[in-house]
Image (cartoon, rainbow, N blue to C red; front, side, top):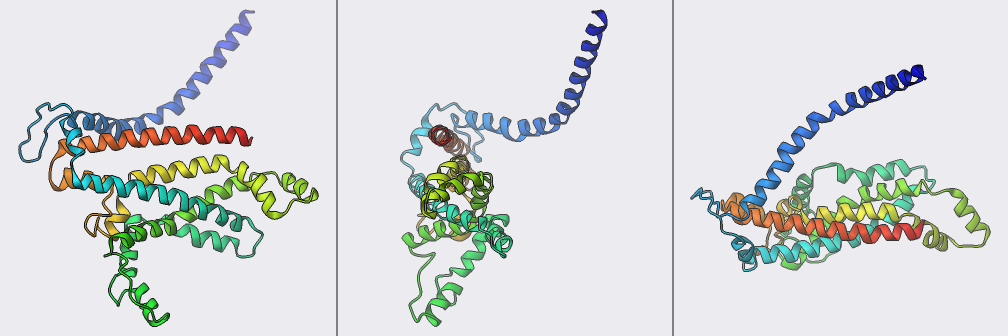
Amino acid sequence: MEKKSNELAVKLGNKLKKNLQFELFLIPALFFYTLFIIVPLFQGFGYSVTNLHIKTRATDFVGLKNFIDILGDDIIKNSISFTFMYTLATVVLVTAAAIPLALVFDANSHTKNLQRAIFYFPSCVSALIMGFTWRYLLSSDDGGFVNSIIINVFHGHSVNWLSDPVIAQLSNVLVCIWIASGWNATIYLAYLQSIPHEYYEAAYIDGASYIQRVRHITLPLLAPAMTISVMTLLTGGLKLYELPYALTDGGPMRVTHTFTHAIVVRGITEGNYGRASALAVVLFIIIMVFTYVQVSVMSKREEKAY
């Protein structure tokens, strides 16, 4: 009995020692995460209720004044409307493009690896670089690459891709679809390849058409992939900055200002750290609420699918 107890103690000791070795590797990551994420987060909450400004360096407590001032800020109003429009449009349109792309990638084609590489490549490059690239391609003058094709090939008129307020907003959405569709398609592809082929074979034997198999087997079983994809698109859209900054620089007439762009303008450009911190807190709460609701709703859909 005593021997068994000693053996058990030795096994527990070895297990704890092994787990401790792995946990020690987490200490540097935890340290830097705390230093660069947790500490600034709490600092932002603290600054949001002060009148901190780069000129005065004052840190007087002002309560909810910064949050109230946000409601009357024209830049912030434009930023909120465009951010929500952009987020909704990209979530819907990228999802609508990514699922068919994943079905194409999953087909037994000799060029399937090339197809995956071509569509995945845009997501590997910085959104800032892609924004500047498309800014050149969509230049509103006749010398722009896209306008040159419209004029010389289709004999049409040049389009104000980046100088017309409505078209500039649509251009940001279209470029995002081009960048994000391939990456999100790979998420769906990973789940698509995990669906047992027996399901399709049984449905085929029962006389189900290809569309019926996609509708009743593929789409329901892609629910977990849709949860992940929509969550990344949702959070990415709400905290968007690089693409509109590079593509349109927030213009024309600030119609492509995003929430994050407004934080940068109020905080870095104008030095109003108090209001910028209040904006950051509002954005943090919005992302947290939207993500929680989205994951909760779509998780129920996963349970029904399985």
